[in-house]
Image (cartoon, rainbow, N blue to C red; front, side, top):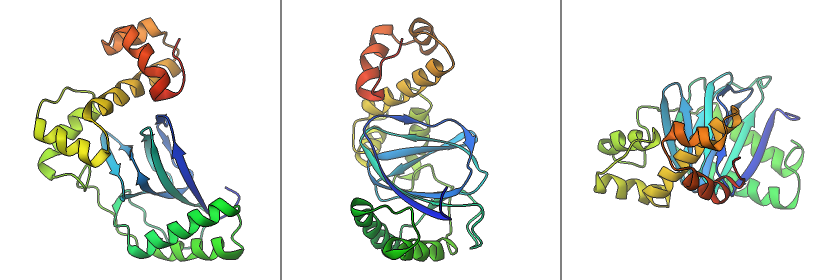
Length: 228
């Protein structure tokens, strides 16, 4: 990081599969469109439109961003003296934070937000003040979803088949596309991980018990690349 606090507005056209790693900064994600997934240990959380998630410094996690997602990210350097939350989890996105992020997106369009001088810097400092008071929760996989559908969501994210139609409909509604599209993204996430580890398409197909032609057909539209 060049600055103690940095903002970015991210548009993810294809599936982003982040590696499992410890965070070098503390950061918040606020999803504006689409959905993202954060894995903490054995648990994976679904961040939907309008939701915020906090990752503290040195937190072992993996971030997956679904295709078509737009999100704001504010990073805080470990050298920042302002106190920040030390726990990972969902946080309530206040009207003030929503307004600050909207202003930063406008600044982002017209000039770099890397510098803490000028309007962008002032906005980021106000966000830093808000972060000092941040309270997070991780008792639900997705606050936007009814608690009794958490089991089905967990199954979907693990790649298991779900037949509960009301649960699938509820999940589809909050993520903005069909459960079958989510299933395809989860399959291709695993396919990409296997590809990164050196597996060939034939081996990936065998491991995932998914036809080779299906994986090959999904790779370009979901990942934006072809798998060998």
